Length: 234
Image (tube, rainbow, N blue to C red):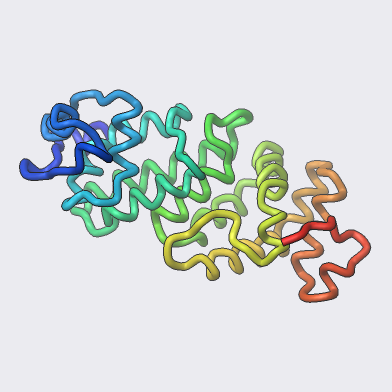
């Protein structure tokens, strides 16, 4: 990322509201290549939705943003899916091939490393949400998790299910998706029903989590009248 996006800047006429985004002096930093931004300015920059040229602004901050992400220094208000949507707003998949490849390689490497990291700076379920929102697809990221069956990846899966189960059992998405929310929810639930039980057994996960996955395969009264229904209210 540092090599590919070295020297990038926002457009010379790029602007934003001083009251809501930041000062003229801060805006000027985005028009100078490779100047390190303080973390608050970095956050305001990727979080803003009203740039006239999102792609140029995103390319300007990507080297620093990618480092901050893997170090756990990026703290969205709600969840890491917000950062994924910042990637999507920049339409990085439509950039020149070398730039698109660099972003894809970064996301692939971060996700793969997270799954085998015993103590990742960002939890696996948060990285997954970011990658899914950035790429507008869930399938390739789930395929990687499916192939990675080590004990660490299984532990991350158990932790993710514990985080997701309330929403999924209410037929709600576990993160706020931009435009294909229902498709991602149903795909994630179906994947968990197929692949999670054996992995939870292998990792000696709490039996309650196994029941949560079983309940996902039920619908309507069969789900909430089951003796193992956790009593969630929606």
